[in-house]
Length: 279
Image 1 (cartoon, helix red, strand yellow):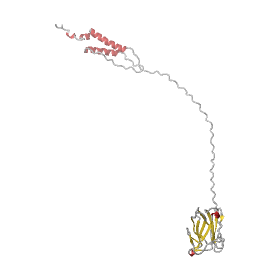
Image 2: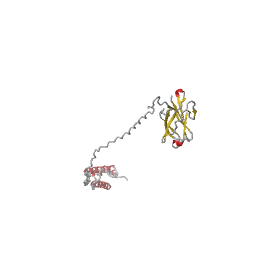
Image 3: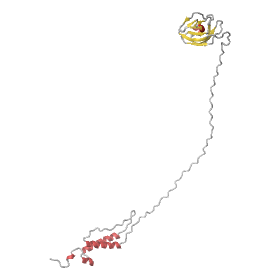
């Protein structure tokens, strides 16, 4: 069965005559009303100001797919008309309300202590160091008078040329072995001489002037040749042979004939040798 003439073009959702006359089928009418309602609700909805962020204006995008190009064209036309007549939404501007900032209170300042008068140190003069006294200069001992100065004649002829030397003898006696010689004559023995001898702490020793040196031949001892010999016991020496002694030579007249000589006898070595030379 063929369709009646003139009705074949009305099989779509919208016919050309319907769009021109403004009459829409029932289903199309409901769809357009739904779109208009959605737009109206969106445009006229309550405007709530956001306190924190401004409201962004977003373009309305239809959430449906037109069933045909004609419906899409009608829908676009109605949306453009609605957008032209709609009042633009005012963007709310958030203005922060100033809060009451508490005024800082004055911090109490502690009272400043009044400085007391500090005594200013006076310039006390430093004591000058006292100079240490110099040690006293030792007074030189006066030169001993020359014991030979007052001797007449040829003066003191003898000088010590050897010794004193000591040899062990057990310390039982002081044995003097002395040589009186003349060096200018080849060491010739000289006779008639003896000595004056003193010991520290004892004094003059008992040496007899009757014992003298002999001329001619000399004897040999442990330390050298001699031509005078004399012995003293410990009792004559204050109880011991050891000690220090001082003496000088006497000539045949008992007069000094040399400068002083000094010797210290070690313990146990009482044999003493000294060489006196008049050359």
